[in-house]
Image 1: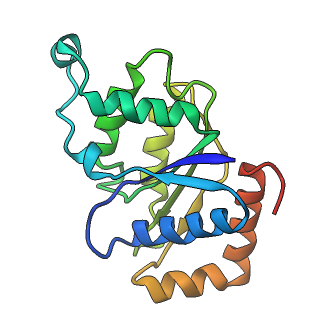
Image 2: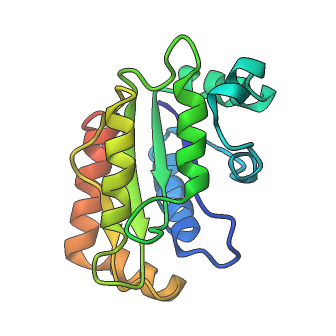
Length: 180
């Protein structure tokens, strides 16, 4: 299976990027391929507006759209910003939603987040899920959510714990086609 991944953070030491890298390594170890977006491409996109769209989408939007279309599924790891998603991620989804044929229509998407809070970024994933619903993506009902993720060692410990290990294996098995 070929997957396209978005780690929606460029912050040095991002727990979401760390979680994304850990889960991507697990997916690769299961024999699948994950192509990771350089997230600065999303951060550097101009704000989506009708006027800008009429002038022509930035070339990089077409390249990202092609990569998503060619992928069997999409993985998104995202921090939670004020109970929502990063504005740059929403802007990227908006630009991609205008590409024809539709980029996300029927595309399986797995979401994940890590946060220092007990909610683990779940509220931000709900906002992403809502945006993806309206572009007809097929978001998986289970997310990988890691709360109390204060540093990489803590994430490693939580991922090794039986409850989270079981959940991650179940989510990946479902997403990757009931193998693993």
